[in-house]
Image 1: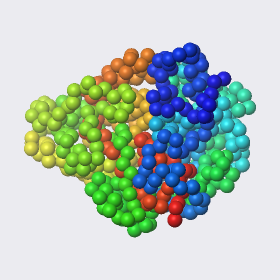
Image 2: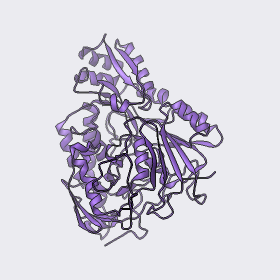
Image 3: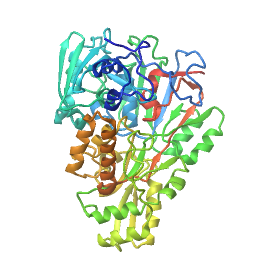
Image 4: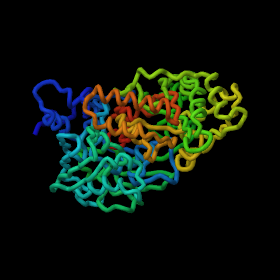
Length: 540
């Protein structure tokens, strides 16, 4: 069995996807390469990381002890300890403190082994997963194959209400095939399975768990307190299976929905790390001694969501008119102060290898907007537009769109609603509103979770049979050229027919105390893709 000599996945350019498997030079067979690429070890921090303003993880030896306080932009009574139901940055950060996954992603978005020791396949359909020995749940029970079977298969049950059911439906079966081994059979080939299993909802829970009032995971921290919508307090798991980790004694996590209040909490020393910093606040944070801003380009976007199953969005002319009404350059400069990249009403950002640069850019065109909105019969009427600080930049975007609409005879009634409860009560429920989508590690995950007809997070309720068939075909295609063309076609379909407007991809801005060390940027989400508690330490 071939393994990487250093126990790690290959570096950038050798991620585990079908194209890399079929384009390998030299004498390896496809089987050999699958075994080589899918052998790995624990994630090690710092090998190919970005240096944060707090300094490289190698600059100072880690210090044990201390308490870190994290403030996010989201918090509500719907906060959960069930990984399957996690839905936003606060949930993800909390879940990663208490649970481990089979895999996780590094700074290059390559999968690294965690509770899995290796994943082997010859056809990307049938996978053998070797499990790590000597791992204990917080209640002292050993980690076994039964826990993996239960954790993965529960997502397929509609009663679980899993946020990733549409991904789990690719799994035909999970079976224990040894004392420390499971076999995962997919409905069709998907070379991205190790990446998919790094998704927060697939974190591993104990076999048979149905009560999530307190978490029982294998993670670096145990739960001392959890009050939904208020706070979470986590304390070090003294029996954690990763030697030497975590460094921190305690982590407190809570939400401060108001951005100005969140920044004030950081700069007053009440918290050590915040996410979703408004571009307007970056100068203030940078100019304050002891604090810095970490900037990470990613596929994060706030989108205009136009429900396709109710009026007025059930008119294709209304949808097109609203897309032409977005002044993308103005949104980039006014709403995000230049901390953004122009987007084109499809979700694959320019850093993704499958980004379709040849898709003609949709311009800001008031005349075309007026033409289509007149055909839709809405000019002269008042249309509610719901925005919230919960969706980054949406209030500013709403104001700018309101001004553009007024010029052509459409009144947008901008309704600003509180962050508390926005995702549960407004998002995907109002005819015209905003979403805020965190980056996903692969094009397949992003398109499957948010655009497939049966996806729970199909924001606009858009249904397109051609898209559904093509997204399934693309995930199993091992010829890179063919796969890239498939993703170009998928981006074109969303751009032309989808019910969402994406004006820009947003640079992720986080405010951090320079006391926090060991930070490595991961371009999927804030707080080191929500895993920071396990790896950072306090230099105070």
